[in-house]
Length: 493
Image 1 (cartoon, rainbow, N blue to C red):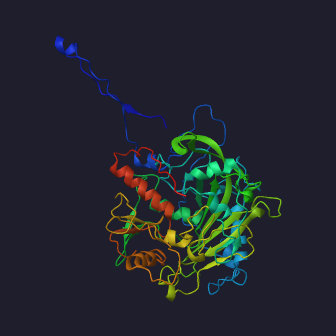
Image 2 (cartoon, rainbow, N blue to C red):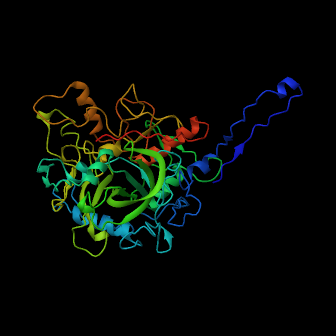
Image 3 (tube, rainbow, N blue to C red):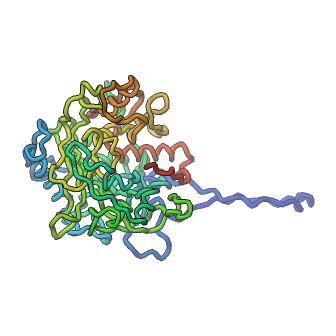
């Protein structure tokens, strides 16, 4: 979109003395776009003139009518008999469940998911996949123009290759030898940028189209409803059964530094430029290669205790198989946050996990999440998939700025962590505040439950992308319709 500017006209004064004075040249002021334009733009920073590579197009022509009922034919994962009563990956049927999900996601995709065409949104001539609006508004981490990826957590070598200990985690996944090359050690000082793009199938797309309509007077404006005895929630929620969300995560790490990435697809991503003098990432962007390292899935399955099942695939270049998809290995699944296990309870009262199932066949290092809960290699090892997503809320009313943190410092839960998250286990009891905060974080909040200690929350039904959309609309609403200037925090190892 070309910038529209308003120029302030300066009237010439007849006074000779005034004519002799120097009049500052007024600075152009960008006119704020309408909400639907800001919400549905393709990228935060457009492609430069002359660019000829792949170019992302937002898929947001949401379904006009509800999709057909979710059955084993339309939602094939329902045909898999799984058990939520065991954490045994094989006995629980989770290997087959994840295989069916992977087969569903790869339908219509290139066998090796290369840079061109990337991930396509149509299957058999019809739109299968949709994108979240408002994620191209933020100038710091908003959508880039090649594949529509947004910037996420920066990972370090230890996330991929392990610490110095020979084993770590509930299943004792072996570590790889630490890479000692000079170039990898240099990169490890600033970490490896993670850029990812998420897609909702037609069931999720139907909900998004009601939550953030594209047309009409309310185009681009998040819509909420308030039900009796419930907190406010987004229109269209809860996500209907059959909703499947998939997220492709790429990393700037290379196979030289992370051997498991050998032969992983390389996607060009318009990401932050590293200043080699200061060894810090800058707000400037350029198209640079990233490797696909992880694919996350989340599916609404009515059989699950909290309706949602989360799963993670990790890339392993050492696996046999002719295609990229065959080398995407299921790491595990999670269907709850395990509030009966440390650190949600005192160490001496902790019970074994009951809601995470990890694949014992994985033989590459995986840091897992807190106390063996599910988390992927580029995720926060102190958190877990379900714990993070279930804390996804927005502040009420719509358009209120979001501040993450425990009251009184924040108005929404700290989904990305806090000081004292997942402390090392020992025989010492946790302090009251530390226990309370960890108990809240590692707990279950099935829709439409609220989060303890907060008032005026709007439920996102576990969708962090929807929370980001609400956060960016709040910036639009309170920042004269314009995005904030780019700022980059230095990542911590």
